[in-house]
Image (cartoon, rainbow, N blue to C red; front, top):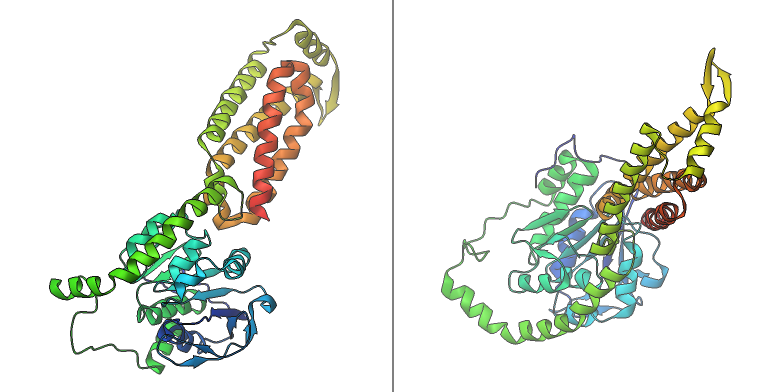
Length: 389
């Protein structure tokens, strides 16, 4: 993915970065991005774990965390590396809860290698394009993600990198997004990142088939162990995303029944509009009320108006708000990912408007339409509020 000055958010504000550290991680998954991100202007990098004792990586290198998970402030970037120890973290309640909490404030949730399986286990990749180490890429699908065979995948607020060395590329993308292309280019030159490997076999597209098969066979036991864990937690993750609201998981709650309700709401709103425009009330009582309103006039701006005109205008506005709410509920998950606060505010504005006009709807249309309108309005308003939190 190419970033330009026009699309990059070149801000000078402090960027708080948290890099998850755990036993038996692949050290380059962490230290590769660390080397790049620590050089970014205005960055504050923390190594995170449950305690601050030295952590032994896959190859025997020790890394010392400087901040406990429980003490971590809201972070702008959270980087999750991969490695053999990743399998244990997919079932670690404290780590998964930490990631679910941070996603509400983080600008980007980032993974390197099999770290994306941890994000997936936390339920954060449902409906997102994501990548992983090539050996374990198919496992992402069971966690609700869309496996994508690319070196770096940027999908909204989730950034995932392929195996190990791809973490450096990923970090350069992030610098470009946060500080602009020139800043990323400067860091790339500083670390003299100009890969020229002696063999052109760094991906399955370039490596000979026999080598791919050999490594696949070697990692078969590891793949099966991870597959069994993911099969066990995958159903739970999908159920959690489908049955609860969260700032970035509302789309999973827009079930077929809910969408049918909003479709019926649009039909109801159109019916209301037709009645208003043609002055055809569904009941004699409603017509009598409307005639009485038409009989009362007042002066405004040098012109004579009837209360019936105001009532008709309110009806049209109510219809617009109902249609908007139907649209909002249909696309709420997608919209919330990009502008959660704005969507939450708009949802409540229309929610209040509809409650204010529902009394008139009761007088004019009768009880059943009012009940339907109110119920769907409450659902949409609450969903928008949750998305905006």
